[in-house]
Amino acid sequence: MSGIFIYSERLDIASELITFAREAGKPAVLLALSADAAQSAKNLGADKVYYLKGESPLAESYALAVAQLLQKQGSELFAVGATASGRDLAARTAGYLDCAMVSDVLSVSCADGQIQTERMMYGGAVLQRETLSGLSVITVPPGKFESSPPGLAEVEVVEVSSDPRVRLVETAPIVRQGTDLSKAERVVCIGLGMEKKEDMKIALELAEVLGAELGCSRGIAEERHWLPVEQYIGISGAIVKPQLYISMGISGQVQHTVGIRDARLIVAIDLNDKAPIFKAADYGIVGDMNQVVPMLTEAIKKMG
Amino acid sequence: MSRIVACYKWVAEEADIRINADLSVDLSKAKGKISDYDRNAIEAAVQAAEALGGKAVSLTFGTQKAKASLKDVLSRGPEEGCWVNGEEADNADSSVTARALAAAIKKIEDVSLIICAEGASDTYARQIGPRIGAILNLPVITSVAKMTFVGETLQAVRKLDDCLQTVEVELPAVVAVLPEINSAPIPGLKAVMAAGKKPVTEYKSADLGVDLTPKTQVTAFKGYVMQRKNIILSGDVGENVAALVAALRKEGVL
Image 1 (cartoon, one colour):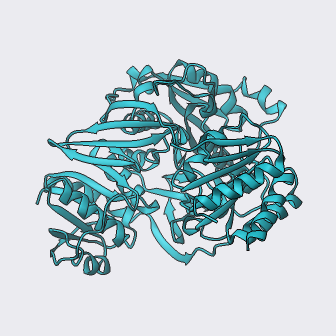
Image 2 (cartoon, chains in turn cyan, yellow; image 1 turned 30 degrees about the horizontal axis):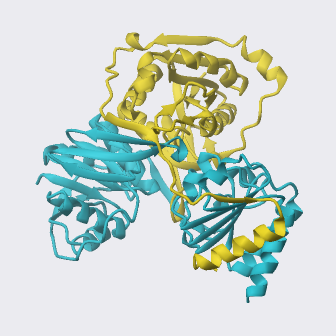
C-alpha cells in the first residue's frame, strides 16, 4: 500500500502523524516494530499497520528492513516522530535509501506530490524552507497536528531480518537529578552572567515565590557544573514552553533562545543593554541582577 | 594500528550572523569555528584511541575555508588530519555530507571506530552518524553518553528520551556522541604548536567518485524573528521592578 508511512514509538506522535496524512489526502500506514507496538498501533485510526517482525528489541536495528518495505510498497514519505530513537531510525533509513531527509520540521505540508518543509538553522536564527520530491524522510516533533480519532486498522505481519550487530544489554529509567523542565509552567533561568555560585540563592528565592523551576544555560551546567545537565535549556538541552520565563545573566545566544521560543512571556534581566536576549524578550530590565532580582522577589511576595 | 575517525564540521559562528532588514542572512562577517558539539566528538576519539591503543584521525568535508580548521582540530589531539576539499560543501544537505565523509573513510586504512557528534551547531540535523553507518553498512549507536571498551567490544550507554540504554557492539562501528560524554579541554600552547607538524591528507571532492548533488531543494533561507514585545526598561531599578510586576499582572502570568 502506498501513502505516507509513519513510525513513532510514542503513540501520541503516531496519532498526530495519522492526522497529517489525512490532511494531505494520503493513506496513513503505520509501522510497528514489536508485538506490543502492533497491538496498540491497530487502534490509532491508521489505514493499515505493518508489523515488521524480527529478532532485535531495538527499533533502530530495523532501518534496512524499513527502507526495503518503503520501496516495495511505493511509499511517498516516511514521517517519523522526533525522539532520540526515532531520529536514529529515520536517518539510517534515509541513508539506506540514499534519499532526502529533513529533521525536526517546524512545519510540513503536502501538495501536488511535493512535500514542503520548514526548519530552523543556526540554533533558531534562520528559517530554511525545502521542497522534497520522491520518497523522502522527515522527523516531526510532538504537537504539530491534532490527534487522530481512533479506529481499527488491519495488521499485516512482515517477517524481516533486523540488524543483529548492536545488542541490548540493559535498560534503566533515567534518574533525573533535576526536574522535568519541559512541563514547567514557570521557569527562572540563570546564565554565565551570574558571577558566584552563592548568587544562585537569589534565583532560587525568585523561583520559590513564583513556584517556578530553575533552569540554566549550557555553560552553567557543562562548564561550571552548578546544575545537572538535565537543567540546561537550549538546542541540545531542554526545550521549555512555560507561561513565564525569567532569565538573569543570560546573553541570549541562539543556541539558548531556540529552547525558549515557545514560552508565552519572556522576561530578561541583564547588565548589558546590547545583550541579544533583549531582542528575544517581551520585557527586560537592564541592571545588576543582584539588585533587581531580590527586589522583584519582594514585590511578588507582597502581592500575596 | 587501528584508526579512530572523528568527523567534524567547520561552521559559521552563529553569534556573528547578521539578519538584514529584509530578513536576508549575512554570513560574510561570520568567523569559522569547529562546531561546538564536534569538540566533544574529537575528544571522545582521542580518549577512544588511548583505550584501544589506536590512532585518532580527524576528518572534515568543507570548502577552502575549512583549511583553517586543520591546525585547530589537530591541536585538540588527533594525530592525523583528513580534509575533503570541495565547494559542494557549501550547498550540501546531509545526504551529500554523509556520502563525502563515507567515501573518505573508505580511503583511510584500518578504521575501527567512527565518531560523530549528534548534530552540527549550524544545522543540528542529527543525520550524519546514522547515514554514514548505512552507507558503509556498519552498526550505529547514537545518543551516546558513555563508552567503555573491552577488547574489540564497545559498550555504550545511550541517553534516550526516557531511559538509559546500555548496548554492545563489536568494532568497527559508528557512534554519535552527546556533548556531555566529556569536557573537551581548550588546547594548550604546546598542543597548538605541535598541531602544525602533524600530517594532513587532502582529497579533492571530485576525486572521491561519488555524486555530490543534494537531495533536498532549498527554496528559502531567511532570518527568523521572534515576535516579542521588546519593552526594555533601564534606569531606576525600583521603578523598573514595579513596572515589570504591573505588566506581568496585566498579562495574567502573576
